[in-house]
Image (tube, rainbow, N blue to C red; front, side, top):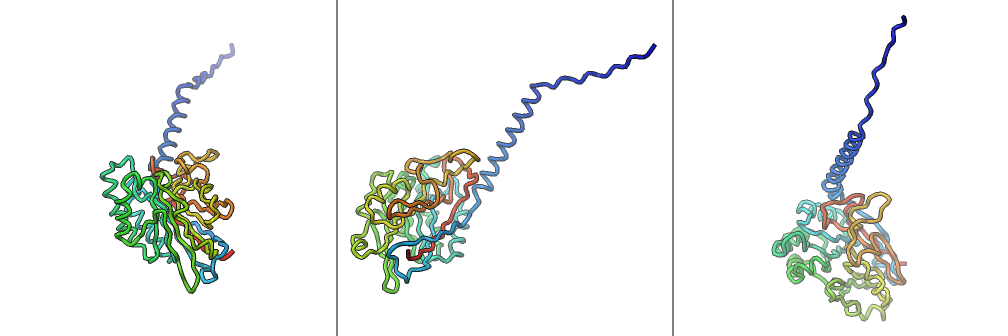
Length: 296
């Protein structure tokens, strides 16, 4: 009689185990992503270089370089060492002008009293920018915390804040204008008031700082601004593959990052230094912009 051999029947795979393994893998990936976005992505700092050609720019300004930073959100969640690093990078670039486009401090989740106290601290660090030509505007967080306190802190270190006003930048007989409007979300911005009356008559370029980029159509309407510099959007801050930016504020949903043009007015949107809402940046590094001006 031939012996009968039997093979053990493999145990059926448990669907519960498969699901648990999948969930565990997903959780691990989420934790890894959060760690990367919070520690590496949030502290990634790049220099974006652009050449901007302006009609009417005098030849004596050919090659003039402007460094722009924005949206520091000091202590929410931008640490002092990271701001110092940005200042060191700006000093290494040796720009002719430094423009700061708002949100030096943050309204939430920091208590307002603490946020006000942070204004002199971040101003002291920014005072280390060696370029003598430094100007800024307020952002919506600065205005919500205490606009006057932020203005005073910046002015104490030699950084004037332009409130619906302008000033000339002159060299070797040439001139262009630097202007700034009050934060648009404060309902106190006044574009016509910020524009120099001489510029149109003399055909001199105007560079306007405006924290929120989506005011571009309103600015372009006046046909008087050649270059507008903004921040506010953080470039979306978290940029997952195949998805639109996840975190975009009011007046920052249309022009998210980079270079745009509407009529006469060119716009550059800086991704900012800090983070807000969540201490994460993913596929959206912090930015220092170096703009080199050339006559058109």
